[in-house]
Image 1 (cartoon, rainbow, N blue to C red):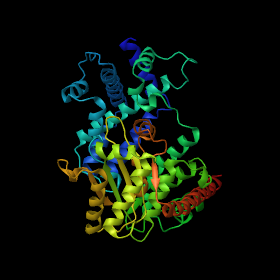
Image 2 (image 1 turned 180 degrees about the vertical axis):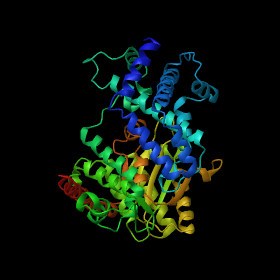
Image 3 (image 1 turned 45 degrees about the horizontal axis):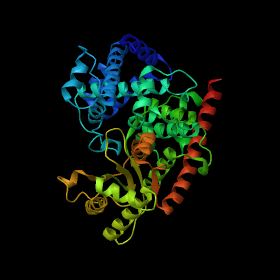
Image 4 (image 1 turned 90 degrees about the vertical axis):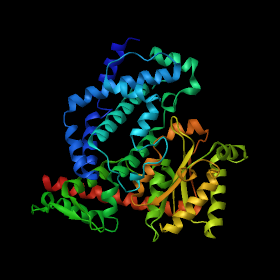
Length: 443
């Protein structure tokens, strides 16, 4: 396959509406301005030239594909003079590891700003992070489009024929698995809640209809609307952001009943149920050493169930009783198996210290260098963001861990999550009711 052919295909993929490059760019600008202050605004301004950034995304995606080919087939890197390619080459590590490090250091530790805190970063770092993340998505999108049909029904690209024939076990799951439509819908629900979570948390105790009516006062009754709306947490949000919050919930696929909900949205409900309790909860992560993961695989039970039983015992040893918790067993490309989850505990310093002790026993990291880096615990501030982050590699995790269902939780929490799911369904009904009134007022 010629280099020009791949370039042309990537360009077409990026312009394809299903990839949503323009929407990604605008969403990234909004996030930069909201969460990084002045530096974020500078970085957002740097992303204004959609055509210039688009060229970088295509070229960086092309480099990603060639590095992927080098990693899979040990072929020589295609020569290029692009500076982003030199950055990858000079790093002396595969592109996916560099990308994980650039985007919230996923290769070594979780992205704690998904819990609710946002680290500082320079505009250049933020712009580069966007370029590489968008490039990864484009490369994945390209691969998925090339192999979306069962083998033999349609002609695949030469590179995929070779990869599937020679290295099937080395392929990431997006190259071999197609999720069900219902799973994809629930993944979309989780993604939207993850993005709107800071505003949702601000209005947790208020009826969505009341919030919506206030945000759409001008459209509903012709009165002059305020420029900003203050939530229960005393944070104020622009009317346009609150309106977008209502619109996005209203446009989501209908949630349906709990027994039909898929893991992505169920985890959102579990995290919200913990955050809705009086103690608010603690978010945690725990990387598993080879010894810990092998111990779980050797048991007769499901690997994740074994981990859940061990975590229950360690929590009970530290706290006297076992608090409710959930976790996701995750393993992305180039990652160790690890857990992301939350536990129903007050995020006091002593509770966080005890939780880290329990997690260290679970991961068996006590004899490792810098054991404190293997586990961490932070206050759970924006639950749906943390839940969405934990399920960023759902299919790859299934493929790499050999566990078909990677979500585990205590039974009482599942019951609470079921009630929280009903609240989420009511949120959607309320949002749709507000949009109906707005549409009627406009007519």
